[in-house]
Length: 633
Image 1 (cartoon, one colour):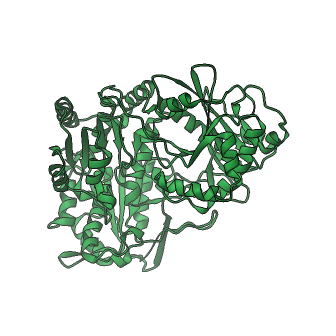
Image 2 (cartoon, one colour):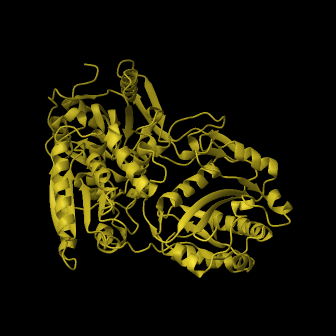
Image 3 (cartoon, one colour):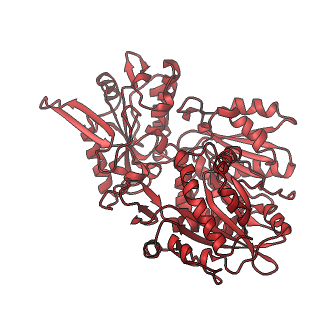
C-alpha cells in the first residue's frame, strides 16, 4: 500500500501560547477566527460559539501565561476527523527528548452543573442537556490515543477541564459527579485555581503541563506531518466487536451474498483498477449486515483499512452504540470527509445521499480519488426526500466519464431477512403502493388493519408483554415544534368516531424526543432521543418517522398513514400540503407522490414479525380494510 500522506490539520488559530495570548487581546482576533472557521470547512460559527470564544479565551491564556506555559504550542478549535467535533484547545509540549505531549483542554463558562444521567448534565435554570465536560474530554483523548500515528515521535495524551467562572468548591463538585473509564485522569481547574497561582506550578499541576517544555520547529513538523488513522488495537477491537455482535450474524443466503461481494472486492483490490461495487437490495435484504461484515473483515488489514460511511444519522448512532468501542467514532461517519488512509470505503444507505455539491459522483471522483474500491449499498425505492438519492444508472454514468474510467460491477441481494422472511409480504407492499393492489392472502407474516389508533396501541401492548420490540411510526403530517422542558410534547393527534357507540375519541402520542426532552425536570428518564428510538427501551411510547426508522428494524411495526397519501378510486393521491416536513417544502404533487409511497414502504417493512396499518383518511382506511383482514377478526 502506498505511503499514506498526512491529513492536513484543521483549526481556527495556532501558535505559541505567549504569542496567541497577545493576539487574543486584539479587537479583530475573534473576527479573524470566525473567518478561519469558515475556511477550515466548519461552516459558519453560531452566535453562542463566538460569544464563548470572547468569554473563555482571555482568562484561559491569562492562566497559561501565569502558569509559565507561554512556550507551549496551542491549537484553538482543533478538529477531529469528524468535522462536527472540535477540541476547544490543544496544548502541545515536549516531555524529555523523544516524546510529545498533547493536552486536551475543554473550556466551559459554567460555574455549576447538575448530573441528571450518565455523562449528561443540566445547568441551573437551563433545560438543555449537555454532555459532561469530563466525558467530552475523555472522548477527545481517546481519539488522539487511537488515531495519531507517527514513525518518528510518540504522543502522550492528557486532558483537563477549565471552568474559568467557577470557584474551587464548584469545580470539585463537577469533578466528583463524573465516573471516568479506567486509565483516564481529567482534573477540573477552576478560575479561582488560576487566579491564586502566582508562580509556575509543579509537574501534573495546572493544566497538567508543569513538566513540559516548549516545542521547536522539528517537533511541530513531526506533529503536523503525522498520519491520522486508526491504531491496530482499535481496528482489531472493531473487527472483534463486529464479529461478536448478534446484530451482524449472517443467516441463510446472506453468507453466499457475502462470499460473492467479497470476491468482487478481492478482484478489485488485486487488479488495482479503481472500482465501484454496487450492491442493490430491497428492505430487509441484509444490506447493513453485509456492509458491517465487510468492515469487520477489512478494517484491520494493514493493506486495506476499510472505512464505513452512511448518510443516515440514526444508523450511524446505532452502529456506534452497538459496537461500543472507545475511539471508533471516526470509522462511522456521514460520508462527506476526504478519506486518505483506506483502500476500501463502504457507503451504506446510499439512497439517502444528498445531491447538493455534485452529489455522490463528485464525492467519489474528488474526495475519494485516493480510494481504489468503493462499495455502495443501494435501494432506489427508499429515496424519501427531494434532493436525495442516487441510481445505479447515475453511478455508471459518472464512472464512465471519469479519467480514467472507473470499473463498475454489480451484485443483487434477493433474500429477505426481515418481515419473517416473507417475500409475499414485500411483494404485496410493492403492489399496494406501485402496481395493482391485491388482497393479502399470505400465511407467513402477521399483517392486519387496526380499526383505530387505540386498537393499534392495544396490539403494541400485547407485543411488549411478549418481550418483543414494537414501535408505531407515522407519516410526517403533524407538527414537531420545539417546546420548553415540562411543557406538553408535540406529537401525533388523531380524532375519530367510535363505530360502536358513535362517540368522538382522541388519541395522542409524542413524536421522537429531542435530546433535551429525554430527562425530565425531576431528573427522571423519559425515553431515548430520536436517533435511538427504534432500538432503545422507552421508544415504544413515542411515534417515529421515516428518518428515525430507515435502516433499522424492530419486531413489530405499526404504521399510521396520514392525509398526505390517500386512496381515491383506483389510484393513490398525494397531498403535499398536508406534510409538516420542512424538507418537502416546494415539492410538487407528482414528486411528492413518489416520495410518499417510498416513505410508507420503508415504514411498512421495518417489522420482523408483524405489521399493523391504519389510515386517518376514512376512504383510505376502508380501502385497506378491503384488502387486509381486520386485527379483530
